[in-house]
Figure: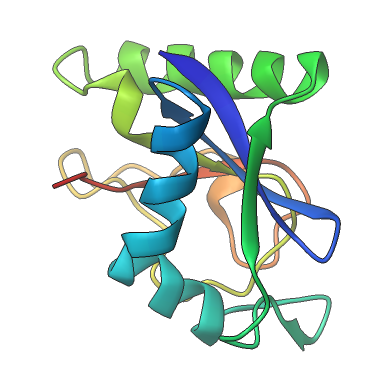
Length: 129
């Protein structure tokens, strides 16, 4: 698996894992849950995606791949059963209201990067079909 980035209008939106270039693009083209989320949430007061602009997959730059790996390690430390290839890393601040403020299993506060409108990377789990 390799780390890829979803880009909209030249802006890196999130990092994710895929087998190759074709599979990465296909996942972006058909992943309804992520596409709906991109239409709904905002970054810097603007919707991330208008529902029409093409979402492009490209290989992650070294710093983006490193950020994904770091978050993956943090997730694995919290839950070793989590499959790292299903971790999606936001590369931009978002207003994603789906992010919990507490860990659902431990009821402990999540690290700062999971807060709303965070400028630090955070994750969302996306199961692939």
